[in-house]
Structures are given as structure tokens and as C-alpha cells.
Amino acid sequence: LCLSYRLQNKEYSSSDSSLTVGDVMTTDVVSFDKDDNLADVCKCLMASSFRRVPITSGGVLVGLISRKDLLTLSAIPVQ
Image (cartoon, rainbow, N blue to C red; front, side):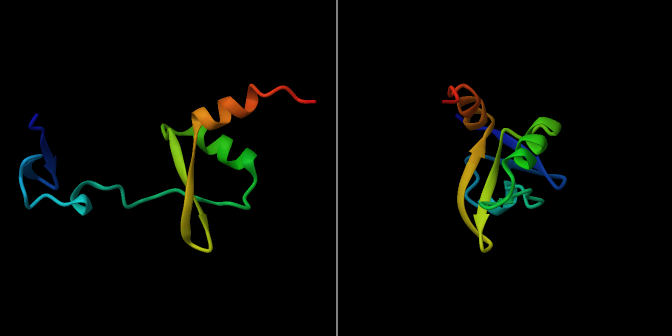
């Protein structure tokens, strides 16, 4: 399987050994701190096309939270 990409007006192929993760990664990242309000994360995910957002602690990545995580949480009965 060979995919081709057009990045910054330059053609790349997935088999191109000069293509790096840095060439294709998202750099304008939205993240939340692990102590942020869960409602804020929900609002962000609902208002955007994001499927998941990184969670940090002290600027270090500690996990991801996804739409599925939130749906699973909402399906748990309250006791």
C-alpha cells in the first residue's frame, strides 16, 4: 500500500524514506490538563471535529480522552 500526500506544496509518498512524522503531524494542538473540568472537554469535543484530545499534567502528556470515553461514562448508571 502506497499513499501519496501533498504537504506544503510538495508531493510525498508513504514509501518516501525522507518523510518524517514531523512532516505530517498536527502542531496546533488543543489539550487539557488532567485537573480541568470534564464539562469543558465535552464542550470542546462537541463543538469541534476532534475525536479525542490529549490530557497533560505539568505540560507532560499523560493520556487521551475520546468521545467514546465520554459516551461510555454517560452509559454508567448513577447509584
